[in-house]
Structure formats: structure tokens, C-alpha cells
Length: 456
Image 1 (cartoon, rainbow, N blue to C red):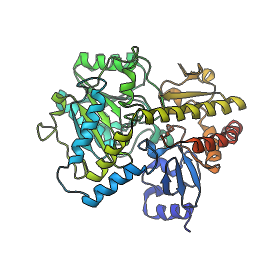
Image 2 (image 1 turned 180 degrees about the vertical axis):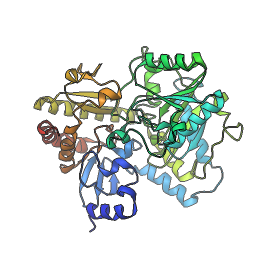
Image 3 (image 1 turned 135 degrees about the vertical axis):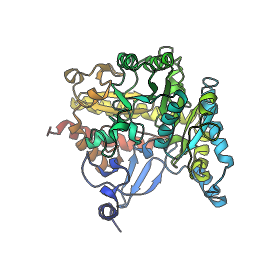
């Protein structure tokens, strides 16, 4: 049997760093990454034969768990008919209709049209290009700690991937391109107002995660997203709501839909949404959507070009259609309940060992920030009344050095947590009693390890 360590050695010989996405290299936690060979429900099995409860779920797409039988059947039956016809297919229409229908159920006309692409990076890159084409302006505002893929103009202060590697940005991005992006602190509307005042009539768009979830989860303050929409629209700019991660995971219409249920948070609609993750059910599918008068600027109807050989690939969209069809109220209820249980279990063990922390959560998406929030100057408050970080600067003050010990204790006990303190935790409707009980049994030793960790 070839072990994970041997596979990692082989990978490093033919792949930069041995991985195809940097966080997989375990750079912030150390050790050898497991190489997965099988996923079933809530469990992953690696090349060493170790079986673990998965708290990554493909970084979000696997709302139903690994290899849901009906999703697998949809993929297999479609692949048996065609793989890549190079033209339009029925599945593309069905997936776009499903996306439009879910948002229409909350607010009619929130999204009229959807353009499918293959990755979240393509979706946000296209949304930015479209916003510039619609407005005739160049500047874009993004927020420190929010990640929108790895296109050149959006890598500045980009959250978890770069935070994990302790990099300020990326080499290879020309200064004139990064100079078109204004980076502001998250959850600070005054900073946004000041930027619009300084650059009046020059800002094409503001792009924001519906809830920040790439510096750990950092919920938007009540009314923050609505305030962004008002500021943009008063100046003629567009608001791009990035739901690549939160979309159709935190609720049937994503975090935008959840906010519309709350009088204090609701009452806003972006000009463009970007989607990914869940809409592919584990296959490479993403998209952008918005009002017809905005989306019609895309080619072939308008002058803003976007294209892709694999955009709307029939095998990939089949997985997305099946996932959205299956993701009903019972599924969201199950994921929410599982998340409640895990949060309560972690809180119980951290409290037991006297480790101060904050829970960062938007519905079933959550993370934990370690440290005495009052001493660290965290200005937010979590659901239990503890101080919590509300922007990237505050997130980075946490005692992140405790996380590797916590992580490896869980990994050794048969749990697969995110390999960075700056990532969200993901559960699925497949996280049943067996999986949750296994995780709960592993938490006491992990909390002890975190509490006993020594600062570098």
C-alpha cells in the first residue's frame, strides 16, 4: 500500500509544493497531508486506511455529504450520454432556472439571468468586468480578509489562503492592475463613504462576501450589507454580492436570503450575485447572476466578453441540479442542527479548559477565534456575549499558534478539520449521530492540546 507520505513525495516531484491549492499543503499546521481515496457521507478515508469525520466537505460544495447516491447517479447517467458536446445542453437551463427560482422565492426579480462558468474565480472576475462594462468606470472596492478568487485585481488582502501562508498578496500582479482595487476594512461603512467621496463617479463596483468566511467566519454587522447597497446606488456603482461560499449553503437562498428574514439586516438586493460550491455539488460549476438589464451587457448580446469551453459542462451541471433539487428544508434543518451541536460541544470543552474564544457563525457556517477578546481588542460580540473579531485586523490578533495542536489532536482521533484557523468549518446533512458522537469524543483531548500549546 502506498502511504499518504509517499504520495506527497511523489506529488512534490511533479506539482509545485505537492498540491494544486496552497492550503492543502498543511503549511500553517505542519505535518503530512492525508491523500484521500474515498468519501462516503460524513467520512473521508485516506491512502493509509484512516477513516475520519470530515469537517471540510470539499470547502463547502458537499451540502449533502460525500457521494450522495442521487448526485452520483445524475453524474454517471449524464456522463454515459455525453461528456462535452461543445454546444448548449438542457442541464444548463435547468440549473439556471433552479438558481433564479430560489432567489425569486425571496424577492421577485432579484436575479433574472445567470451565466454559468467553471470556477468561483471566473465568476467574480466576470462580475468585475461586467460592472466596469456597465458603468464605464475602472475602480473596484473590496474588503481586507474577503476572498474572491485569484484573479489579479482581487488578490490584495485576500483572506484565508494568503493569511495561511502569511503573504501580503501575490507576485506577478502588475502595479497598474492592483492600483485599480481599493482595499478597505470590513464592517466599516464610514470607510466606504469616505472612499466614495474621494473617488466620486469613478468606482465601478463594490464586491463583498455576503458574509465574510475566508478569515474564519466574520458576520456582517446588522445593516452593513444594506448600507453598502445604498452607498453604491447613490453613486451609480454596482454592488456585487459574492455567495460562492455562502450561497445555497447557509440557506435556500444563501446568506442574502437569510438576511431578508431579519428586519434589521434585510431590505437590500445587490446588482450581481456570484455563485459556486453548492451549485456544483462537488463538481466544477460556478456562475453569476443579476437583473436582466445588467446581464444583457454580456456577449453575445452585449460588448462584455466571457466564454469557456467547459462553461455549463453537462456532467458538472447534472451534479448541481441534483444537489439543489435535494436541498430542501429538511436538509437545511439537519445541517443547522448538526452545526448547533458541534458549536455547543466545542464551547463546552473550551470552557472546561479555561480557553477564551469567540464563536463566529452565520447559520450553519462557523469558525472559532482563540484568545481573550477583551485583551486583544476585539470590537464585536459573538452569540454567547463574548468579545469577537469584526474585521481582518482583529482576526489576526488571535492566538493562532494554538490551532496546530488542536488540529493534529483531532486528526489523530479520526476527525478531518480545516487545516488553518483562518478557514470555516463545514458540515453536511450526512453528519449523523455516529459522526457527531465521534467528533464529540475527540474534542476533550483536542481542547486540552490547544490549552497546553506554547506561543512561539
